[in-house]
Image 1 (cartoon, chains in turn orange, yellow):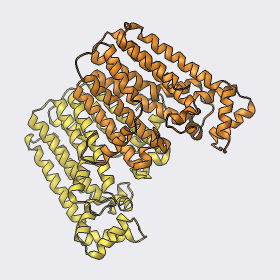
Image 2: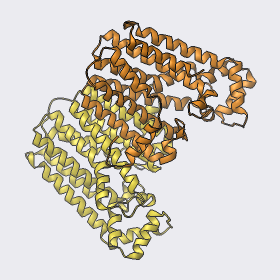
Image 3: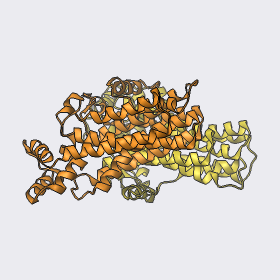
Image 4: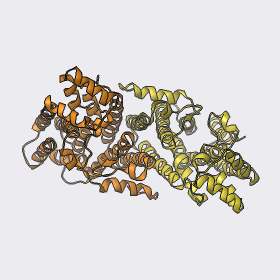
Amino acid sequence: MQSPVALIPQLAAHIVAAGGKRLRPLLTLAAAKLAGYRDGQRHVALAACVEFIHTATLLHDDVVDESALRRGQASANALFGNKPSVLVGDFLFARAFQVMVEDGSLEVLRILSEASATIAEGEVLQLITQNDTATTEEQYLAVIEGKTAALFAAATEVGAIVAACSPAQQQGLRAYGHNLGVAFQLIDDALDYSANQAALGKTVGDDFREGKITLPVLLAFQRGDEAERAFWRRTLEEREQGEDDLARAIALMETHAAFADTVGRARDYGNAALEALAVFPDGVERRALEGIVEFCISRAR
Amino acid sequence: MQSPVALIPQLAAHIVAAGGKRLRPLLTLAAAKLAGYRDGQRHVALAACVEFIHTATLLHDDVVDESALRRGQASANALFGNKPSVLVGDFLFARAFQVMVEDGSLEVLRILSEASATIAEGEVLQLITQNDTATTEEQYLAVIEGKTAALFAAATEVGAIVAACSPAQQQGLRAYGHNLGVAFQLIDDALDYSANQAALGKTVGDDFREGKITLPVLLAFQRGDEAERAFWRRTLEEREQGEDDLARAIALMETHAAFADTVGRARDYGNAALEALAVFPDGVERRALEGIVEFCISRAR
């Protein structure tokens, strides 16, 4: 994060100090260990690259979404303004590539540059489907595979690369990351309508206010009658929202088991993530990655 | 620019179709030829990478500056909104790195990732010095070296890399690009207060309205009396601008030879760029690069 331009480390330090789970770099570290990497420090630098790319996307997301809060604290754009947030995001993204170049693996550069492009595609697709209740589950899945699962998959695959493990193990770690990422985002999207959300330091109802079309919405919409669909169209497409509308949205989701089924879907992806680890022997490293699946899904409780 | 997410090629095609000089990719092509690259096509793909990085920074700049025009047409942010502009910028940036990975040179990746970080630093420094008439010439120079000269230098150095020329020639091409970039930006900053600007498809007085502290401003401020300095502080720091203020700013710059001296400074950098080419024999390739220097400086006439 160092730079002679003091605002850059200041803004970057703000978002780093605000915490967060550091889940993605943890995946790189844990995947490297599971794949047999023992003596070097490459996984540490590359885990930092993964987190830098993630942080850059957070900075840009918060500008794009006009978010006021990030991890329970004032977001960087709220505190420093949109302009430095966009530019410091660019800086961190570039820095990540500098560190990868220093590491020297073209394979790592390939994986993380591809993931970066896929993230941007997922974010743009999310913009297009926003405020559109005609969005399909397939489109929704493409959004979360792009904006979330791509970096999870890259994070674990990079761990496999530094360990120089077998192609089957590399593929297993990538599949684990991908499925975990989808599960993680499904839970995130359920939490946005959940009272548990406040405990995680996020605002409840952000997705609703912005008209993001997530699986809980899609399920409630599909299963609702005409009056309910009119409610979803008014609140999410026309964005005419009254004081009680968020509560009504949550009630409709509960009526139609939209939460339970979203969490169930997350559990399916979580199980696929666990199965992908079958190419590795049981042991403390594999159990660590298995534990992350349960951690991600149990946030919804 | 291809992507299954249709908005991405649409927005990218808009900014590409709007034209521009394609000066940076041209530098990569011309530098490769001057350095002796004859048979391959690597310089074409890498020239595209340079232009993608430049386009990404333009998309983000226009969001940051809230610009309505780019190359005489509606800017992407004005036409498509800020959100897609930020995200398509991220996409093009990631794509550039994917293409570099395909090319396979870690040295090229090093040069362009470093340039990308330096550009962001220059842009942030520009934000910090904006609306501050206490900005020094040294700070101003650091801004334009970062936001402009870094990519010019990288563009020419990448041409040298594909040609695998001598270290002295590589250094010469880099120095050429750097000095040309500084000259180019000095002229750009003079043009922002010039009637010629309209002919280039840009709005006159953008920098003035935004309170950007460029060399013409710095020279007029340094050479002005107290009443004039009060004028600059009111218009650029406090951003209280009346209808006639831009005309007065231009008049003050003419009084104090701020244009002529900015162009003179550009000419000095242009000469340094020409000198840096002395490591190459005379010939059509070298004369092409020499011609670019004159082209850049003559825009101010």
